[in-house]
Image 1: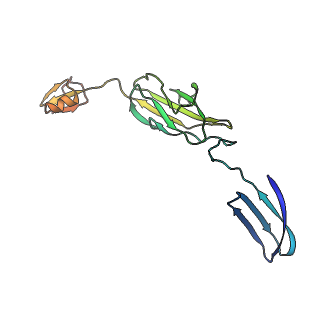
Image 2: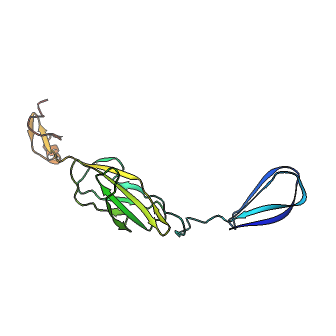
Image 3: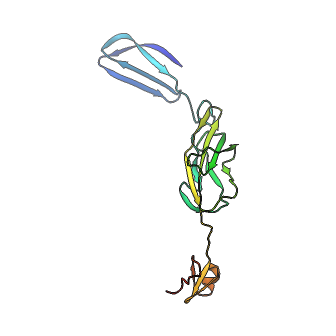
Length: 190
């Protein structure tokens, strides 16, 4: 909304006059370029859009935030689940997930702030993007990535100079040193 309000002011120098009336949320601005003496001077009144008041209105949503797994995380389990937080004003999310650095594999639109990609491959980097959606449109999210861990998991134990296939807990109870290496060749030959 824009209208012109004519007022009489006595201004003896150039000035920019702005007043924010916080109770009515109007912005009143005028600029005097020369001295006026009791002359009519045009003032413009603007009514800015009110956003973020609990309604989506005509405002686009903000991008989702705080991804889990964190962007760049490594050694994630092959059953990792993805989650995020609403950045603001989203009513649903378009989910993209895959091994392409530019995720284009659309998995669907959903209201939940989590996604289960199913069983993942070991030693693989996954890329995902969540777009926030509401009645006003869509805000494209950032591309996040994480990597899964190796297929080889060692739970061996050095008991003196002997390597034994014990879990870390059992190794410590036996007074050994847990290692993350195969027993052949013998890593306990320090």
